[in-house]
Length: 153
Image (cartoon, rainbow, N blue to C red):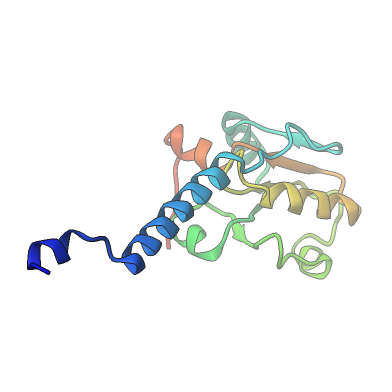
């Protein structure tokens, strides 16, 4: 067998790996395309746009702002005055330590319309009896798209 004949035959291991890699890429793109959107609204919470968030910030200096994103995302940039608490880590005890008065205004946000973290946090707060809950559904994506001020650590 000549060297050129040997090199032209596909290596079964390489072919299998290439096929597996292509399947992985296809499944990842399918997963990204099917990622659910956050609900349009949450009963009991006020859904705000970025402009409405700015007005709320200016009119309510006692507003508690909860950034429900991962710590690494928060450190790269967040809304000034926000406190980072991942929705899966947020407990009733933690929220009560931040806002003992259940009528205190609380704003939740995360990465945007394809992020479910802040909607989960909003639902938790409502189930724990909080009455003045705001949800910034557009979240971080809308905030930076509108070039609003950010803070990074």
